[in-house]
Length: 575
Image 1 (tube, rainbow, N blue to C red):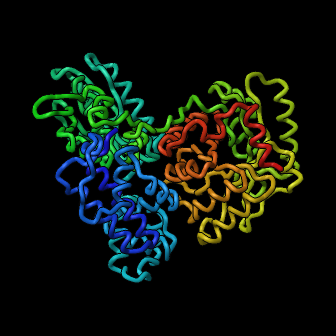
Image 2 (spheres, rainbow, N blue to C red; image 1 turned 60 degrees about the horizontal axis):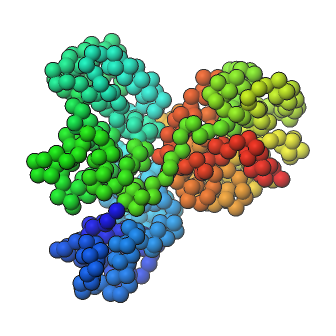
Image 3 (cartoon, rainbow, N blue to C red; image 1 turned 120 degrees about the horizontal axis):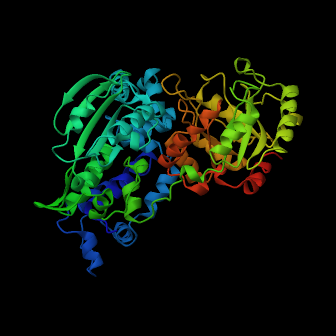
C-alpha cells in the first residue's frame, strides 16, 4: 500500500534513533533527522508524485543517498537500512524510547553503560539506584524514570488473563441470553491477549430502545455500579474487576470494536493514516466529511486507510501497520496448530493426576503426544525424582504406551539448572530420555552476567533440549531474572536447542517481545501447558495467544510438528 510523507518521516526518525543508540557518527544521525523534518513538511505527497512518473524535487539536505532511500520506500513500502538496524539491536530496546523522559541519547547510555535492554530492566536499575551513577542522569532523573515506570510496572491492580477469562465468559453468556442482543464481544487488552488485564471492555449490539443496560446492572456478581446510562455502564465485580459495557448499533460495530480493542498507540497510528487521507475515524465509524464511508466491520476500517486486517494480538504499534501496508503480516499460529505438549507433571512429583489420566485428558484435547517431565530431585518441595525413581517411571511409560491409542507419551524430565550451570541428574540417565527440559528454580537474584552465563552453560550440556520458563517470572509475585535474553536466544540457536513459552497463567514466559526475538533469530519455541492436573491443558489457549502477540507462525513453534517430524528435532539435541 502507498506510503505518504508522514510515513517516510517516521522511517527516517526511527533510523536516526537507532543510529544514535548505536553511537553512529553524529552528522549521519543529524542527516536523517533533517530528512524526516524536510519530508514531513513538504507541501506535496512525494509518494504520489513519484508514482505518477514525476521526479523527486530538490529538497534541502536530501542528497543522492537519501533520495535513493525515498524512492526505495515509495517502491517497496519499507527501507532495507531500517530493517538491518532493527536486527542489530534487541527489539525491546526501542520500547525504552516510549518511556517518558527518555530520548535516544539516554537510551544509548542505558544500553551501552548499564546493558539495560527492556523497560523491566530499566525499572530494576532505577529501583537499585544504578541509573544515578550515569553521566547526565542524577537522582532527580532516576526518580522521574522510576515514577514514569511505576504506572507501567504495577500500581493499578491487574488480573491474570485466565482470571479475567472466567469473568468474561460468564458475563458474555449472561448478555447473550437477553432478548434483542445481537453480538457480544470482549474488547480491550483482553482481546489483545495481554498476560494481565486491568478491566474488561465489552461491546454488545442491540436496538437503541433495548433494556440491555437495566438487565446488565442486575447481574448478581456486581458489587458496585459505578455509572449507568442508556448505552453504557461501568461496574465493579465482587472480585474487584471493573467491567465497562457499551451498546452500539450494527453500523458502528466495526469502528467501535477497533476503537475499544486498542491499543491506544495503535488506534492513534491508524487515525493518523486516516487524517492523511482526509478521513476521520472514531468509535462511530469512518467519515469523509459528514458521510460515513466505513465502520460496520473492522476490516472496513483498516481497508479505508489502505491496510489489510490486523489481528488484535498485534495491535501494539510495534511495526504492524508498516507490515500490513506491505501485505506481509504473519499467518499467526492458532491453538488448533498444536500437536502436542512437552512439559507436564503427574502424581509422581507435584501433579494431581496419574499418567493414564493425563494421557486421556491430552487426547481429549486433540493432542497426539505428551512429554512427561517431572521435577528432578533438587526440588524437594515438588517431590522431585532421583535417578532411580525416574528410571522406574520410564518403564511405566513404556508399558502404558503399549496400551494407549491416539496419543504417545514421551519420556522426559524438568531438571534443575544448578547455580554453576550443571544439571541435577547424571548424564547416563538423561541420555535415556526423549527430551530434557532445563529450568532455573533457585538463585534468582544472581547478577545478569552470572545468571546468563549459568543458563548458557546449561544449554551447552549434550543432553539439553528445552529451556523452561526462561525468565523465571511469576506475574505479580516475582520479577523475571535479570538476564541477557538476546544472548540466551543466540546461544540456543548455536547449540540447536529450543525455548519454552510456559502457558501457566502466572508465568506466560516467554513474554511476547522475547517470542519475537526468538522468531527473528530462527529459534523454535515450544508452547507448553506446564500442566499439573488434567484441567490444566486449557492453559494452551493462553499460550497460543501469547505466541500470537509475539508474531509466531505455525512454523516457528516446535510442537506444531507431527510426532514423526518432532522426533528427529528432539534427537538432535540429545547427542
